[in-house]
Image (cartoon, rainbow, N blue to C red; front, side):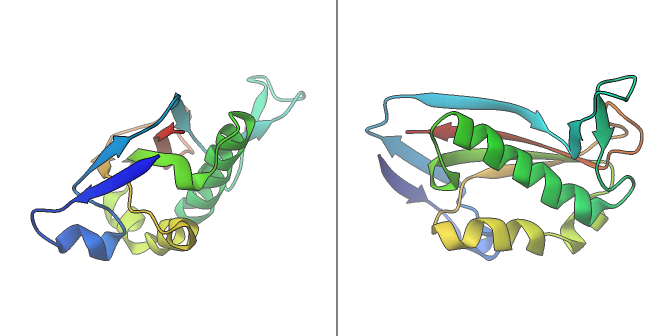
Length: 137
């Protein structure tokens, strides 16, 4: 797969993101539903438990780990990511903890285009972040 960064200006580079990317030579695309800081729990009424309730930093870490799990199940890796969408109930808190994402993506040498959305609530009130991803291989 060939990636060509598109950056009319360089401001996004500080956030480990390109403004756009041209992706060529791929055979499959994975659209990953929003991943939150949840884990299976057979004893819970909903079938899941919230990891790091009300802890944005912990939830970012767990949500990214859940993206890793989806990528792995699809036979892909972080290096296959081509875009991300972050949804959060606390934009300022998310930006203050953005280093969690940078440390997660930086070793893979890519800067997927991304968007950050401030929203009023996620599916469970204790959740602070949800991350959607698209990958190609």
